[in-house]
Every structure is written in C-alpha cells, then in structure tokens.
Length: 484
Image (cartoon, rainbow, N blue to C red; front, top):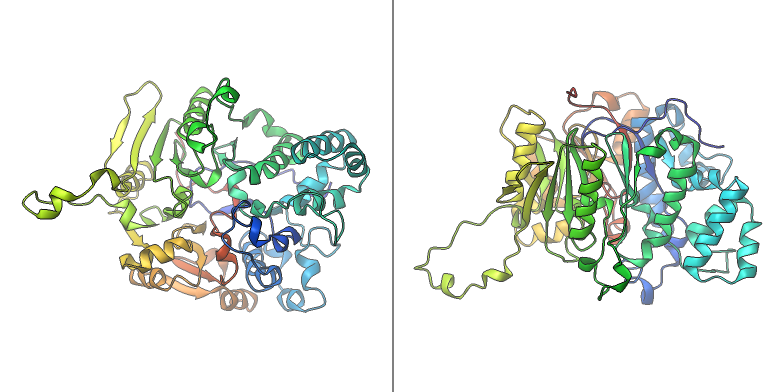
C-alpha cells in the first residue's frame, strides 16, 4: 500500500479550522481530451489547455497545500521541483518521484492501492464496464491490467496514449463533490449528471475498501434513491434524489448546511437529513434553496466562509431587497414570481422548522450563535458589490474559496474587484509564487499567517467552472470550538 497512516482521522467540524488532511486529484490526461462537442455533456464550458493548467496553475496549488499541511515533502526542494527535468515526476502519482503525502492525498493513489486486491479489482472492473457498456473481452483485459495503470485508465478513459475506451472523468479535480466529512462521518454524494457517475463509483470503492478508512466504514452514509424511482416520470434533478458536495457545508460541530440547487434536489437533501439525524451526526441542518441555474450550480459558488465573523458572498442573491413602495409605478408591474430569492429553512430533530429571510441572516446566525464570534458579522461581496463585476466574478468563483486556516483563504487572481473588497476589509493579498518563495526563504511561516487572501493563477483553471473550495475534500480540520 502506498498510503498508510496510523494517525489518520476523519474529523471536520467547520469550514475554517486549520486544515490537516484533504483529498485532491491533480489534472490528468483526460482533462486534455475534452472535445468541444462533448464539453457541456461533461460539465465544462470550454476546453482547457492541459499543460498550462498543470504547470502554471494547479501545481502551485499542490505546492501551497504541502507547505501548509506537509512541509517536510517540499521545504528546501522548491528549486529542484521547479527544474524542468524533475518537475512532472514530483506531481504525477504513478512516478517514483511523486510527493506521496499522507496529508495531501491524491485520489489516484488510493484507487491504485485498492486495485492491488484481486477481488476488489475484479468487482470494480465489472462495475465500471457495466456503466460504460464495455464488451467482455475488454473487461477481461482490464482485470489483468497492472493496478497503477488501471487506476489511470479508470480516470482518463485511455487504454494507451492514442486509444480511448470510454469517456474521461475530468470533473474528478473537483473532489469535494464526491463526499463530505461531517464530524467523523462521510456523507457520499449522488450526482445529478451522468458524467459524474464513474467518479462516484470509484470513491465509493475507495472509502469502503482502502485501509485508511477501515475504522470509519460504519460511519459512511450512502443516500438511497427514492422508492420506486425508476417508475417516476422525468429525468430532471428536481424529481430525483441527488446531492453533491459543493452543496454541503459543515459550518459548526452541530450544524450542517445543504444547498438545493441545479445539482442537489430537495429529495436528496431530505434523505441526507434523515440519515444524519438517524445516526445522531449533527443536531440541525439548514436547507438553502437557490435558483436552479448554471450561474450558481452549488451553494459554494454563492458563499464560503473566511473567518468566524467573515464570509464572502454574492450580495445580489444573499441580501433581502427593500420593499418597493406601492406608489411607485414599477411596483404595479414587477413580476414578483421572477425574483431570485433563496428559500432558507432550518431543521432540528423533533423541533419546529425555523425560517430565515435571507442568506446574510443565516450566516450571521452561524457566526454569532453557533461559532460564538462575539463581534458583528462582516461580509465581503463578489465584485465589491459593483455591477457587472459582481456577476462576472461570481461566475469565475470569487465566492468559492478554500480556508487553509481561519482567515487564510485561497482564490483566483482574476477577480480584481473582489480582491479590492478583501483589501478594504483589512486582508493582506499575496500572489502564490511570491508566497512560496517567502516560505522557502524563511521570510514567512505558514502557521503564523493571518487574514490573507492567496491569489492563484487562473487563466485556464477557472474555465472549468470551479474554485479551490470545489477542488478539495477536507478530511481533518482542527476544532475551533470545544464540543459539548
């Protein structure tokens, strides 16, 4: 087994506790094989240049994560890693020079590990081949394939450099959507789109069969489909039981937020609540129903947390509008049914549901009551709340930030007006290349950093329609509150 860690734990009680362990997947060759005619079927808005997204963008993310979570793997090696001769070997999980961290864990490595077991390999090959309609001889060929190579094939869809046997799963880089750690449980997703079925299957096999997760197998929660769903009409997400991790936020030890969106249905949220209450995982769950539109996709494209008392969000969707006086002509002609307002309902077991008027009210309640911030809640708005930059920058994930620790978050460098809003809010702003050099030269220590927005290059990566909150599956964070 490549990844073994006797200290491995699942424990996530907030969005902002210091990050200790996460699962990621670096861009693979399948991402470079997305063709224009299939891009939207595979949930991409455009095709992406693979070498640029690796070399100039995502590799910075990996290096940053290692400096914060596993500095022994990178400290003192930055120049060597950036050398053209060794660069790719450090980032490729099938290479002898791979960084192989048990804190920044590559999903492809975990997949290769479980495929070493003949019975698991046979079952998973059969399951993948059933989904992808492979013939029997190809199934036998895959069963006999080296586990490391087979893991690459399952992810990239490529049997050889030239020959593809089924579609890639380019969305695997958005690892959060596969599952969410809720305290010491794992809530597995049920994807809304067929393009994500195979990656969900792979993650299910990893969680139930990898030794890292052995102690937590009874804590894996799988959302069942609605009874006799196959008899129900329609293929839309609203009529099916779907849930994706971008719509799930663990905001405090007792409180989970679930978004109902383009990708997560009310039925999916309902089943998640039933499971969570049945297993006593949390005490309350809040449902935030946002418009079923590609603009928003998941709730983490609308808001994410920065500090106990600070959130970044899209104000046009988050704030309740002041009522229009009826004497104004517009009040008589406005189509109130078309207003894009979230519906927010909080559920506690055996308690009457609680309603919130807008997202800002909910986030204020989380900060001041759940997290005991002790101060007035602050909001940093996408595009500095200036049209059209608010909508433009929300589209390029200005609200989709990953907290490495409280107050230190990672986002895209292209969202200029949002960066201005962070500066006005008292945050330092630094580009990742400069920051990494400061870490290497001992000019800065990751553990002593406070109130900082780290800017990542984003010309290609942002076109995949996901930010760094999407590109992370936190497994272990420090607790920021003492549990009762």
